[in-house]
Image 1 (cartoon, rainbow, N blue to C red):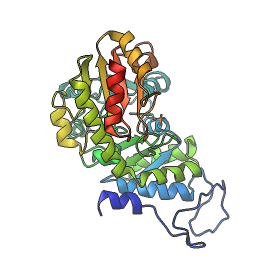
Image 2: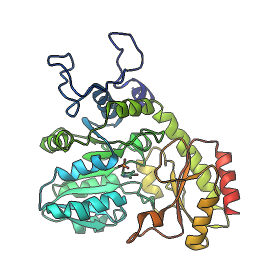
Image 3: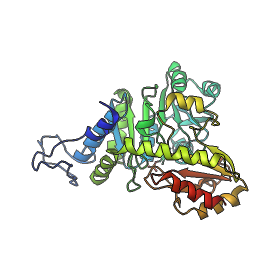
Image 4: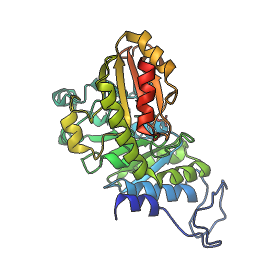
Length: 369
Ligand SMILES: *Cc1c(COP(=O)(O)O)cnc(C)c1O
């Protein structure tokens, strides 16, 4: 089946009691023993979550199973918490700042060691591999510089040394990159973003290529770590996923138009968008992505002050963090990331939504003038 059909049909059942076409929301925390679904307690499994995990497994090409969580960070944490004290991990030096904090501060205390490298530099990745490296972590496109990692090449480096590769592909969703088919062992999405698509829930998922002992550990992190999504959130997320393929097409089309407009604007210094020929990893992006996404960053002339002024002047692009919703958002990123950030002070991160592209361009036109 094609992806549009999978997005609508996977995890779908007619309600046997009522014939309802859309699933009921199950809020019950517990279930009477001997029920048809073998449900016991909703931290372990629940009807809306099972349907959601079925859909997410089907949607991710090459996926064998999926674990959903109450946030993207809980999904990321489950992968790292399944490692052992003394293990070494390699991370991108521009990884999502929550992941940086989790690995360097929280899990450092538990004996996890790490090295941060530029993931677009394959020699640096190879050089950072140690005998105890069990996981290489990548994020592509990266946040907020939109650096693109060659997933197949990094998978080869990790696997040659007996390590696994986990990829945070939140900015692609399962639609724009077949991350597991490229060789990753796990793909993680913050479902808060494109998968949910409407900025009305937080969630996360890990999808695995193989069901093995490591996967059992991640499944146990879900059950005993307990950061599980509610029945209502699972229902909302599944509802959002039904339109994902069409939404992603709109995000990609609009972002390309906005990127092209910004690139030729005299008040703009640089546009970071993998779809532009000027992007340093455009060739890798064109090879491994089925679309270039709805996220872009723009560096404006005039430094931090100019960036702040533009973000304050846009009217359709609301000034807020997060991304992947139907509505367009803009954020002056460096101040949000705080001390130690490598993000340039003149950078605005933009989530291009599904409004008409001409209106989005007109909004930037007036804000930059
Ligand atoms: C938002 C985001 C996360 C964290 O997800 P939450 O749902 O906010 O916990 C992780 N990685 C990337 C790339 C993100 O954009």
